Image 1 (spheres, rainbow, N blue to C red):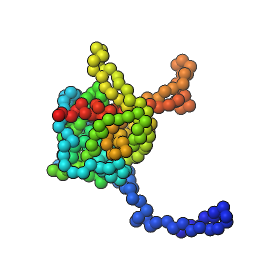
Image 2 (cartoon, helix red, strand yellow):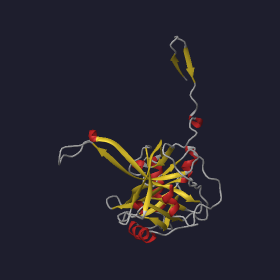
Image 3 (cartoon, rainbow, N blue to C red):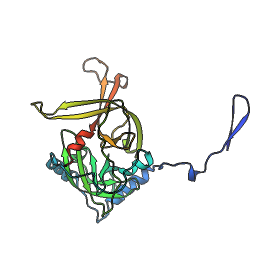
Length: 288
């Protein structure tokens, strides 16, 4: 216990809880999770798609739909400890010639959209031809090989992949019916390999973009103020009810005017737009 002095001069004793009950949410060990991912995907009987295979598969899946979101089991709540159970790491392993061992390569994010083992992530995550063997890992460090890319929308930067669960059902997020500007949201992802990072913000904009020359094919996007970075691609954007309203996709920095041919500096960044796949785009991948 530690004393501190109040303005009156009286000493008040603060009792600290023991380590065993100090945390109600999971304590993340990045090094341990990375080791579990590498070991789990390197098992002889675990074979997932390679980056080259995945890039071909996601291209072939563009425009396809899948029946999803109809499995049994309770959906996670908006609580971090509960919601994290439906967030996954989507990554790859690479062989190191210098040490003769496998190491974790690319790190991205994803989330369970169907309990049977369907995972939502970005199209651009799955089209990395240079990636090694690709796998998915949950909060407990259990690793699942990626079997297929079964639905994709290149223009909307969304894909649904299938993993081998061995018959187990996973916790899956429901899709929100709509999203509103000003709505409070949370993002759980893996920026820079800092697994299961939580940020909060609001939906600052809902907008559409034309993706064809005729102007008939459009995609809806949302911009959020919740922070994220490289490694968060594919992370779910959740509303207060724990429903998915979007999925992390990209960032774009707004820069102050600089001299011609001059490299911008950190102080030239005025704001960052954090654009996310909308729930509307995710619904485009799901058949009735």
